[in-house]
Length: 370
Figure 1 (cartoon, rainbow, N blue to C red):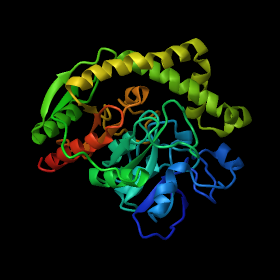
Figure 2: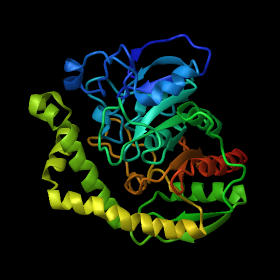
Figure 3: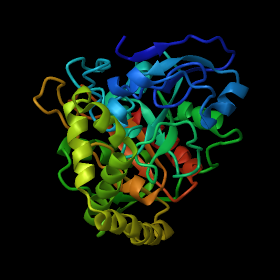
Figure 4: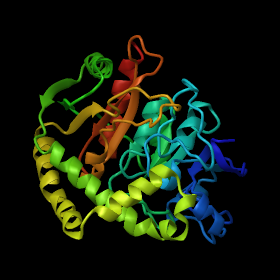
């Protein structure tokens, strides 16, 4: 049962939906897959605000899914509630933090899953399990009733087995949402350092098959954006969750303790500088979007590592998007000679999830021909 923290199997005429267990569902405790929090959690009195349109659509909530503890980790490995099993290779990580969501989708237990993304938590497990995830524009989907990680970066978004499912999921979160009528006329291909050559080749092959125009783009501010984003995330994480550390440090996972202490070590000036940096990073991306409305680069720099590695880690490329606040769509593409697909992410301006989805449909259709 490591996929699920709580099975509910509620009846409904709409799609089968999984809810990540840091999102309040009325009548159930929210644990964030943390033993310390679970020991003190009371049943939520109301649903999180983002679930209101799902209730109106009469979805069937299958249950609340497992995740990387407190949503702070990219592997999905959880010492308290178990680690969801990656259906592509049980020896490898499912990705985090929305691990249970991706596994429930990949195994066909649900049609749509609702997850959170602060530094890649929707996109990373999608990449590891061969599914699709949409990180929404910061502030687009309400966060009331969602256990926070880093409030200035946190977002809620849909996950599904394919792009069409993500579009359906987005329409559940925001009734009336639809993909744009046309894909982007040109893609800006960003070359990220230290990418597995097989993943880069898979992304390039899928883009070539799509017959969309692709132009290489350089983002000089990438490294600074990454550094600033980590400073913001870790410091806010400490501010939000240090009461759990103070209450029972021994009850937290070792990686969680390490990350909280990293956050405590970020000085207030460094945090404020990280927050201030966002404006210049957004300006750099805005200038790029003027010429290339959608950017693309791999979701993960590597294929999923084994669970039993001493310290399995993922080399993610997603936090820079959260730091900017822009939307991003992760989708799988075939990787020659690998049991795993690669995953690419499309990044666009604020509130252009519709354009990302339209472009994703084109790329996904082309990838099926490879």
